[in-house]
Length: 236
Ligand SMILES: Nc1ncnc2c1ncn2[C@@H]1O[C@H](COP(=O)(O)OP(=O)(O)O)[C@@H](O)[C@H]1O
Ligand SMILES: [Mg+2]
Image (tube, rainbow, N blue to C red; front, side, top):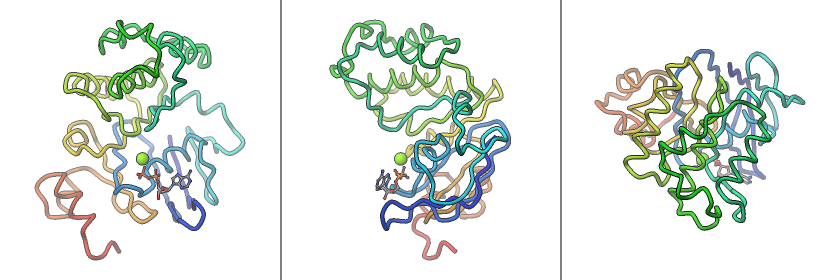
């Protein structure tokens, strides 16, 4: 589904990805973790073609993504920072994205789930951060692509919405999709993820199950296992 080889990306003199290899060839929930600034969003944007790597190759569904754009139709994406046009109403934004995607969508169910009906005729600039994030979630989940990428989906959500998000992720998982998620909330990661992909110093430091990570670090819970990597004297 996703095959990455020798990915390099620098921003100016700042090397963010340094020869990263990653293969994700089955369904399930893959949590992309790593310290702040470790390149999680850069990796995700590279997969989406929104960041152009300096070196390396990326294939999605068996096709190299370079000079190709059709593969993006196979991906639903929730950006970490959603720069919605503030003067649009929620209803108009949903309509616009549907027109662009030209795919079947089931936004009504999601609007009801997140109780967004009262906001449909409000301008995006007037919404709270949490409500904007719910709109972001509706836009990411309303289509039915085989690959779903969620960059910090829990940001700003209240407890009820967080529960709904977890249900939606489980539902996608049961539909045999591949889901990539970044999050800083370890409780959330532990609940939804099948595989942990840990980014450190421009490379994949660890890829495996939560159980394997606990064994490797000698810790009994995910939060401490992740902290143990981040504070280890050597990452070699
Ligand atoms: N467009 C950009 N221009 C310059 N630097 C960037 C840009 N995007 C990301 N960076 C830098 O790359 C590093 C990795 O960023 P990012 O991928 O957003 O990390 P993460 O998502 O893991 O927190 C950071 O040091 C960030 O400042
Ligand atoms: Mg990020």
